[in-house]
Structure formats: C-alpha cells, structure tokens
Image (cartoon, rainbow, N blue to C red; front, side, top):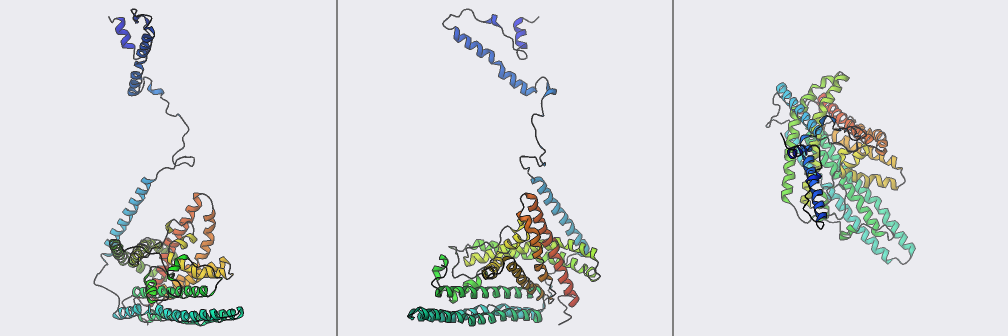
Amino acid sequence: MASPIQTAVSTSTDVPIAHPERQYTATTETNGSADAAAAAAAAAAPEPAKSAAAAKNGGKYRHVVAVHRMQRPSPLSQDATVAPSFMGFRNLMALVLVVSNLRLMIENFLKYGVLICIRCHDYRRQDVVYGSILYLLVPCHLFVAYIIELVAAQQAKGAIARLKKAETAEERVLGQDSFRKTWGLIALAHGINATLNLTIASTVVYYFIHHPGIGTLCELHAIIVWLKTCSYAFTNRDLRHAMLDEDATPLPDLYKDCAYPRNISIGNLTYFWWAPTLVYQPVYPRTERIRWVFVFKRMSEVVVLSIVIWIASAQYAAPLLRNSLDKVATLDLVSIAERVLKLSTISLFCWLCGFMALFHSSLNALAEIMRFGDREFYTEWWNATSIRIYWVTWNKPVTTFMRRHLYSPLVGRGVPPALAQIIVFIFSGLLHELLVGVPTHNIIGVAFLGMVFQIPLILATDPLQRMKGVGSKVVGNLVFWISFCLVGQPLGALLYFFAWQAKYGSASKPQLW
C-alpha cells in the first residue's frame, strides 16, 4: 500500500496539493520570512514542469482545443490584409509555357524536319553589291549637312561682326532681320540634302535590292541618317539664332564646353554619327573609360539572339506563313484568325529577341565604345497600362526625336497638343511604311494604317490610366499586349508575306521587276 507521501508525489503533476504539515518547525522567528519565501518558491517550482508536460502531451482534453480564435479572411479574398505570394503559380505558368513550346517544337520537327540550311541563301550577288555601296554612301549626306552648317556659321560670324559695328538700334534690327532671312536658303539646302537621302536610298532598295532582309537593313540605315541629318540642322539653327539674339533663353550649361560655332567640326559630327542617339547636341554626358569586357558580353548577346531569331524564323515562322497563303487568298476569316493566333507566339518571341538584340545589347555596346553616358534607350514598356505609355517608353531614341523636333515645335507654334500628337503618329506611320513597304516592294499601307490606328487605341486606354485601382491598370496592360503583340504584329507580317508571295513567289526566284 502506497504511503501518503508517495500518493502526494504521484498526484502532484495533475492537481496541486498543499502540505502545511510538512513545514519544518525548528526554524526561528528571525528566519521565518526567508523560510516562507523558500516555501513559496518550492510550491511554484512544479508549474514549469506542468506547462512543459502539457505542451508536450497536448493537454489532457485535446478535443476541446480552440482552433478558431480570431476572424481571418481567405488568402485570395479581397478582404485579405496581406497580399499572398504567387511564386508557385508563376513557376507553374513558366513550366506550362516551356512544356507547351517544347511540344510545338517536337511537332514541328516531326512534320517538317530540319528546315535550317547554313549554306543555303536566297539573296543574289547584286543585292549584296548594291546594299554595300548604298550603306557606305548614305552617311555622306551627314557630311553634306556639315558643309552647309559650316557656310552658315561663317555667315553668322560675319553678321555678328556687322552688328557690333552698328551704331544705332535700327541698324542692329536690320542686321538681325537680314541674318534670319538667310535661314530660308540654309533650310532649303538642308531640305534638298535630306530628301535626296531618303529618295535615293528608297529607290535603290525598291528597284535594285530584291532580298527583303538586305533591303530592310539599308532602308533602316537611311532613315536613321535622315533623322540625324534633320536633328543636326534644326539644332544648329537654334544655336545660331541664340548666339545672335541677346534676349534668347539661356542655353543648357552642358553646351558651354563646346559653344556654337566651335561645335561645327568634323570630329563633333563624326561622334554624333556613331553615337546611339537621333538627337544632336554639341556635348553629351560621357563615361570615363571603355569596359571592353562589357562590350564583348553585349556583342555576344547580339550574335546569340540573331542566331535564335534566324532559327525561329526559318524553322517555325516560314512554314506557318506559307500554310496561311491559301486561307488569305480565299478570305477564310476563321482560318485566318487561327493562323494569326498561331503565328503570334513565334512573332512575339522573335520580336522580344529583336528588342533585346537591338535596344539593349547593340545600343549598349555602341554606347560603351563611344563612352556615351545616357543609356536610357527604353524604360519599363512591358508594364505599360495604356497604348500611350507604351509608345513613350519602348523606343526612347525615336520618342525623344519626335518630341524635340516635331511635337514641341508644333505646340510652340500654337498647334493644339491633341492635333500635334496626331501629326506625330501620321509622320511615324509614313516612316514605318517606308521601312516595311520599300524592302518588301509592297507599299500597301498596312504599316501606315497600323500606326494611325494607334490613335483611337490611345483614346480608349487613356481613361484606364487615369482610373484608380489595380483592375484598370491590368485591363490597360492586357489591351496593349493583345492589340500590339497578339494581333497587330502577326497580322501585319501575314499580310506583307501574302503580298510578297503574290508578287514574287519566293525571295530567291523573282518573277516581276
């Protein structure tokens, strides 16, 4: 039979029992308070052991544990106070995207085999010869603009010398008016030079360079030089007039290092020719040195991305385009829509690779070689919540040119901003039609209409940009991706390919000249 002491010990972990009879009686009054404190500590000592055992064993009454202690929303509910992480879903979507495209690659290989041929080419010797000559001669128009500006600078120096000798205010006003009238002749000379640039290049590409790839490179080069020539003329005109006008708005401090007319030099023009910008400035922000490892990395990216685009175009895009010709010829709208959606994947892939190769890798490599400091060639266009935001952010060199030399002067002359924007898009549409229609020898207006159609899309998506909340931004971004990348680009490529095939049959076998 268990003793009372054993019974008390065995039950102490379940029910605390006080035992006053076990108090020591041999203590004195002087240490009574200390003994009382020790007794209290001894009585409280089993409590941690009890709570540790309860935590370990889950307590005696496990079925009554309170699991619903507070109000909590579902993680995907709008009432959730903390945004959930979608990393797993992103991984799943990336995995599905990879698997789906891998399946399409296997299907393409089983259906067509390997269509890539390194030794095969569909360009003629004449295309290479004319293209090379044209590529070398187009920059001459920049140096013609330099000669024009050199003459204008000498005339400006003479005008300033005469103004200094003027004794009366009337003589100074007459001298300034005479100087400004010469801008008409200078502008005419620049206009003829720039017009000949585009006219000669477009004529040679359209009539003598059959291959659309070579023609596109030549036409793009001609348009770039044309834009640079215009910027060179407009900027120096304002610099020249600002030098003459004592009350003119102060020029940027950056220009003091190369004030007009010291900027009219071969070295200054050559730097602008190669600089990755379309806007002329006498001085640009420069880096201290060239990082050749950086240049090598960027050029390696250009080579790899170019090969990827070539493989994707030859192996996947070309069969899709050829198989779509009969559908376009018979105006089978359902089949055309199916082909456009099917083509949108490879079109978007090639376009993204082209964007990286041109705007990121090529321009950064060129900027590093030229020690060009301002390398904001694009911003976060992929997050565009409206069509307007996209056009402002994706191609900064062209956007900067249009704003500085077309939109801002129009608004400064009293043109309403909305009308000025329409004029900018019409002008841009003409350049796009030249860039696409001339090399393909089919000026059918698709590229031009595609740019003009951006105007109603801008009007439709601008309200979404002004709305508060995430939903409107998501809708605006989806409208951008659908209208531009899933419908616009593949449909345009399909129409120009159909026009090419209807006129020539293939790139290597021209039928009509």
